[in-house]
Length: 150
Figure 1 (cartoon, rainbow, N blue to C red):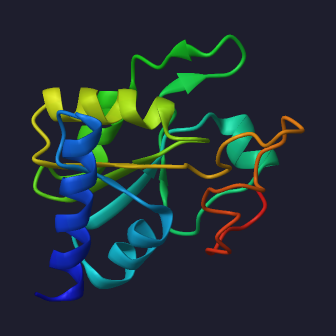
Figure 2 (figure 1 turned 180 degrees about the vertical axis):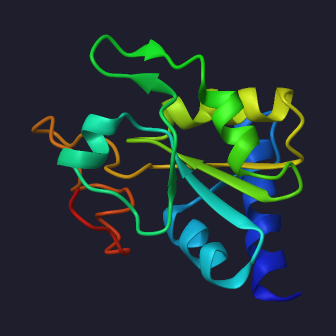
């Protein structure tokens, strides 16, 4: 089995263990690897514009807010923007700060007809540590994957 199939199989098994309705749950390194190996893979960062600007972002990720700052109200234009920019045949990988908003967005994308939907666990910043700080336990940045300051 090639590397792409191995990653997708592990993500499917992880997703099944978590009970998610979409195709699977990726670790940050796996999402990064798929961006390099699978031409149809699209990473969609669903955090808000303030997070992209002040916390950082992944190069070549598509940025579409799931919820908008301030107030974190749902973005009614999320699905229209996604449908305009990403084919339903693409491998859709959704990421937020820690994996919660991206889970919501993944469920919405699946309901909208996307066929290969994955949530990126840990997200961009990861979980809070004992000092209530992110970026030390897990997440895209903690794993040393490529990112840029907004």
